[in-house]
Length: 144
Image 1 (cartoon, helix red, strand yellow):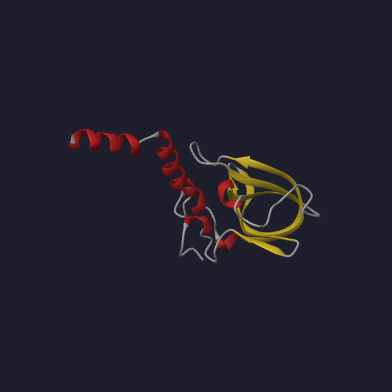
Image 2: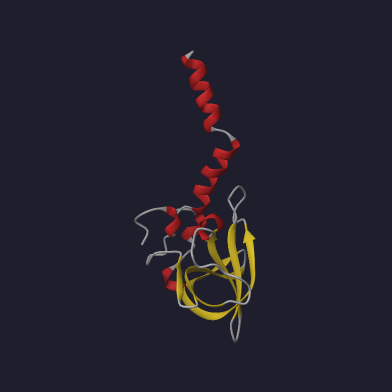
């Protein structure tokens, strides 16, 4: 009987939903390859208008993230904000046409210049995504 219970527990732990959430934690977690790309030395601040909002999947098996495109007076920037499930819980909601200020790290993702956002300001309201060191706030305490 104990063997059957142990086997059942293992099957439950290895169910597809749990594997997905474990993979999601690895890919969106503060020590993930993606989040380690954030570099405080490449800090940039821009102001512009959101021209597109898209869902992206940074790695296979990861939950969707939100990517925006912001047009400034001189350039168009691709900006990664964070996981959709985290952004859906925030009070600052975004739409195409919003005027925003974005702060973050300018990095190269798939040979494209991208900003991994630390914070976004819209209408005087701040959406904080990362702490001072660049660690994502969605990955738990101690990341400021």
